[in-house]
Length: 631
Image 1 (tube, helix red, strand yellow):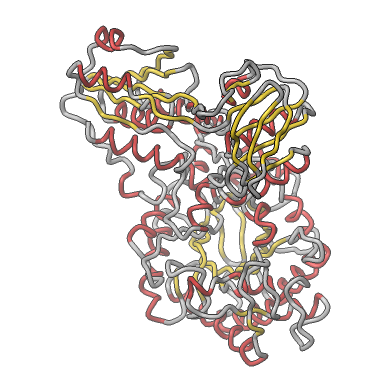
Image 2 (image 1 turned 45 degrees about the vertical axis):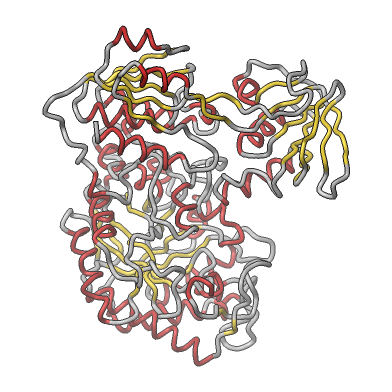
């Protein structure tokens, strides 16, 4: 039998398999930290998918210790009944329920919470973040009590276990880390003293809960930052936590300053932080959990077979496909809707918005799943387009029972951003086919083709064409569009100037950078790719620097001539960059001719907006779904 399906015990709690759901903040709670119907439905849906245990997202242990007004609160007994709703919804599907307890410390935002931030020492996590007030010794002792009392409430709410969040640079981790803990009292100094806060919490919770109640502890195996918490230190901390009564060590990595290791974007390899769990597993005898882009069952199996961890936590993968464990068990891994690590979910949460997923439009909207509604009188529905709205409209129309035909225009589903999110397009097309829609590739679509098909309804995605600026020389021989460069239809050599530093321009620069070309980006804004979520944007910047791409920001191109590009610099002075090739990466603009011609012919039409850089891909996925439900 595969190790994935072998049972395992965490203390007295037996799990039916080795898949668990990792805790992820969702912003689904009601304002004020109360449990909402949406958050209950969210967790129940994932419990149905076959995971052995769900670790429910952070719940604040102190009234001034929340990162958002939508963080769950467990600071008082009055919150127990609401929490019990979550526990009950999970447990009725033969899935264990564990709650994660949390205090952000210096990683809180006083503008959000309304309270001053606190920490072990007055050391901010970033130059732009709040300066935390140093906790007094009495306050430290009080917080130990707060964690333990919240653990007691967790048990009373019916959860099968509790987890203390000591990772990702939150308060417990701040005490662990030499980056943030400069104290000279009993809670600061060497690693043993820095571990004392977490150990004290563990000991007091064990006293309150007794030996039988399962307690998990999450740590960062490393902060992956010079001068920060190291794996050698976390091995010691893990051992101390086990000695204090921890039944399981849950190993992640990073903190806010190295956020790419907390929620690894697509640029990073699947399973890239498993090595930290492996190091901790060598130090402790209790089960060890690993996490981090484990988006394929065969990778999870390998981790267990090689004894690198005892359990595999899935966070974003269960957002994308709650049935991942069931599909793996049924031997149908090809049917799993893969997390593409686009981090749209994380970006929404960072902005304190409702979590969702570009791969799963029902994530956070579970009440809508399965409610597309079969139509009593199916009609022939034609969907024309190439972007996410068109693909989702075709999928939902097919699910509703319409005779659906999807004309993929321009030969590239997904449009100009296909090159950026290829995995999304691949999975979405599979879903369109599975819904019963017929997919036909069309290099060109015209009114006569529509007339010949004679559909009852036409859902038309706005056509698009690459934007062309109105500047002298823009039609010169050296000038080309980024979409043509990315498609491989243009071969470039020598010096290349890219006009436009959005995601399209940055991706073009990175692709060309592999060929060791001399590349310059000119962008009017103060930085590149602001439309990209912040974790991926940070890595994009690092890649641009590594590939020696010259970046000119707050510069306006005024002309193109035979030698290169003329622009106005930030100081208003005119300058130039010589170039052998000039690439326009200024996005797309609407082309409404097809839509208008179909409408004028009298066909019932449903316009779909084309994907743009100014909005999330998810916005267009949802737009397509909602439009198709009205047909």
